[in-house]
Image (cartoon, rainbow, N blue to C red; front, side, top):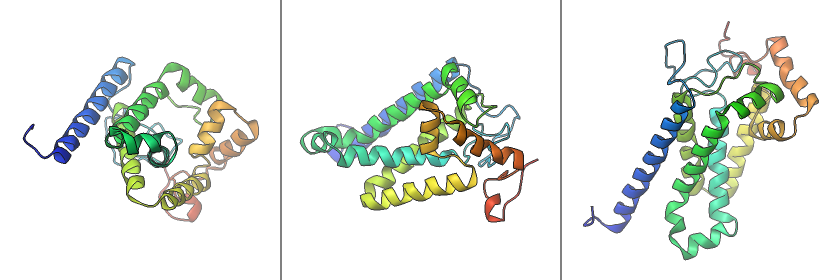
Length: 220
């Protein structure tokens, strides 16, 4: 590996570091009592019903888009906002921005699946039956973060913000939740927002993530 070109060697080092972060995260999540995958015994690529027990238990669900949003925002932060922008120009931080972001995202996955945050979600947000993510879902969330980060690092900043805005709007229209609302309800819960969000459960609205637009199957 020492005889490899420096750029290739650095890429390999970055991949190894990210893999190590994910591996450590999996060990900690398992120690926290997280299940490997859905208790139903299946592993689905997509679970669109946020009101079912399948939510956050399979590979991807509507909240996967919030993790893509994490990646977009952290990339913009690390690339364009001081002091990170200056560090990228003067130090090797430019090469390690992605692993740094993955480490933060992995830490959030651990915190998010702690008893305190799970109870906070159940009390303050629309996630009344939330019991934490499966390990499969958490790893997929980190993958979504990586996708968002790499995407934002390769396109203009205003395209990243446009993608972020579109995802937030679509999520608000379909599941009445998104990254912005999630943060608000965790930090400063508002009963008016919660009532608006919970109305979709009473109305049977958006059971399949795409129902507001008149297509897509619903879940029982």
